[in-house]
Image 1 (tube, rainbow, N blue to C red):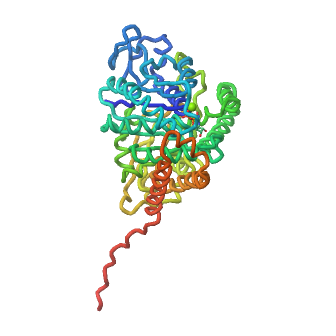
Image 2 (image 1 turned 60 degrees about the vertical axis):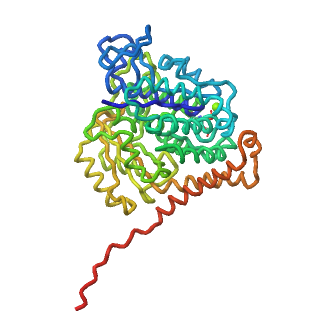
Image 3 (image 1 turned 90 degrees about the horizontal axis):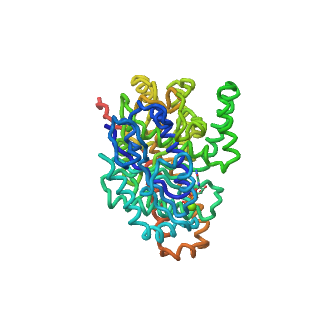
Length: 487
Ligand SMILES: Nc1nc2c(ncn2[C@@H]2O[C@H](COP(=O)(O)OP(=O)(O)O)[C@@H](O)[C@H]2O)c(=O)[nH]1
Ligand SMILES: [Mg+2]
């Protein structure tokens, strides 16, 4: 019986990623789509869907159980933004009916890309409303397993209010896992205060999340570009039937450009939760990921890579009321290919190269038609080639979920708890220090918080980097040498 997850999307980035995520979640549960279109009455609400969705009688608002016909799906989600434009777009778009008023916490002014405004002003002001919305969602779960926070680190609302909410969750729901998908700014980010916001938020992510999957916009952008190229190539090869793929890449270039990037993050979240939702021969739920991949509480940053590239379903397929045709199956990647791609630095969702640094642990979450023995052969090869910390040489966690992502036969999500994240955090720390040595823009923050918060955040990120670096360079203890008898 799958356990439930509640997503909490905070700020512009969090809500735009959330929108992509819910589109993909609906596409994945495509067996329900016909009923969503109102044409088939035979589709029923099943266990797999219950992780992410409630099945609600639209007239009475009453929850209908597993096994009943689909009535109306509501997402187990809380939408939070202090500038309500993106949330309103979601509500007025094709996904609008997935959410009701009790799931929303919004204001109109925004946090001005200032972490301190989100954390210290909006936090206390909206803390009760946030908890109430989360409680309402939690009460509708039978066995709530995890919160899934989505936000950016570089702005004000997602970064400030998002991290404030994380400690509220820790206090009010200590037994529920706190997973986070955090979008880090690119080095040429438009938001000039983004290094401050990211480092200030990082301290709270380190202290209050159970597990975080950092992604950065530079990496997302280059993977999205590679995906668009792959999509264009496949549409040339297969022109007639897949002309819609071409429409997707042109909309990505004409729009704000975030759609393709956000869809990669949505795939990450779909894959990391797939094993908790769908059946499989080696199920790995989120608790097991946290248990196996996080050896020390603060060192909970998992670098992710998806293999193969995912071409998202065209927008018209993802509309809530549209019928979803059975996805076309792409080529069937071999295990060595999937693994090699997932370890390539060009595929990491964070600017990192895990294969060249030491692993604390590694997880391979496979979906589709991969057999246990194929997976074992893959892990065996990795065991010989990756640098694992000496006290966790067996630290591989493998998951096998039968249901592949739409459009693929098989896929791999590789999650690495790897010392290479230290370099990304060091780059961020240096950007922070460039501003902070001059105390530039600090006065915007000291309206809301004491300046000591800057020093504490700097200390926290410095210690985190040092922890990873120490593990990266620590020599393995020499094997005990048996002295040869002296005769
Ligand atoms: N990947 C991605 N990044 C975003 C998106 N929207 C904003 N960002 C990034 O998030 C940061 C700004 O934060 P934003 O979410 O707009 O601020 P907030 O609304 O105050 O939380 C910058 O680094 C932006 O590049 C999005 O939809 N996707
Ligand atoms: Mg905003």
